[in-house]
Length: 75
Image (cartoon, rainbow, N blue to C red; front, side, top):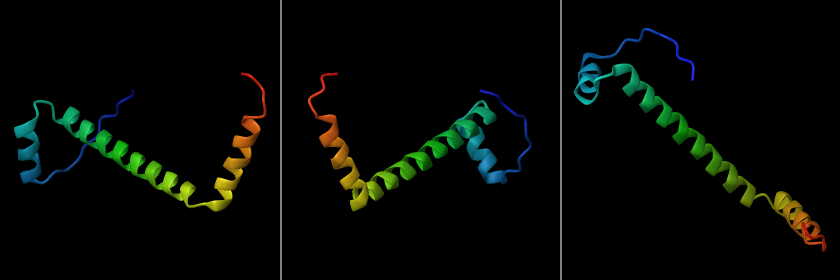
């Protein structure tokens, strides 16, 4: 994974919190942001699955493919 050096500004209180929890500020902040990125992705994925379940046209298409997949061919 590539990294870029940047400069950010943190409130004194936030910086004190980071310093209490981590020896490496960059690594700590990077880990938190990666976890948030994953959380957002998983929420979007969950929402997409919910949307598919409620999409009757999509469900009909899946049913048609299920029939086709069971047409007697042995894979």
